Length: 262
Image 1 (cartoon, rainbow, N blue to C red):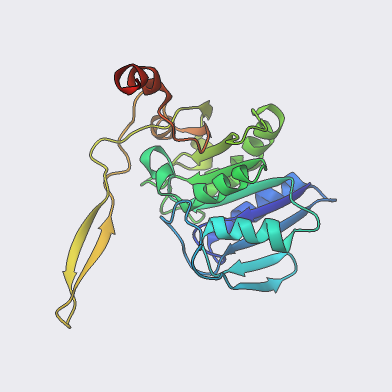
Image 2: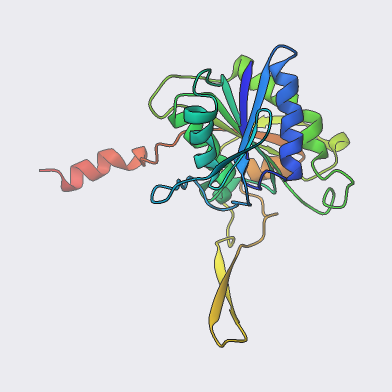
């Protein structure tokens, strides 16, 4: 199998090394793993693409490239330049440093890379490692992802819903914030919503007298209800959430038609 991998933490991120190991196991001895990752950290850029300026692409070694752009840019570079003569059969994005569950999905560059792959018609999976007091001080903070990543990807390749719709399904995987030995299993979940976890800003005055704003988030360890991603992770399970890029609120269509169509 030919696999393209990317991330949003940058080409030198430890989570990318974990993903490389996962991808090599999935690809097999006769397969190939190609890396196109951001030259610098791109956390929180979502599905951003560098539409108004060019993206510099540098080859670092065989099958390993750094792009001066977002994860979605990296996927575009991988598909239409680096691997244009022999496209990948699978795109993996991650392993992100921190969870991409609940509302984080909408901001995540890791998910942005997987989404772009899905929009390009390829199977795609995003993988993220939830952080918490039980794993943040481990020698390998990605222990759960390293232990269970291959198994989860294989299960999705064998049993996942892989359609050919325009807005095709892609998958969001989050590993729980605990050591690998404590992982209880896998749960298929919906995307949750954390109360009181909206992003905000914190102002700081520079010596020059100019104000700068730091974007900051809220608490990450708040459960999000039965059957949702964060709750599964906090309960010790790997969460797998099927996603589509279609943002239409289908549950409101009929009522809205009745109210405003003539």
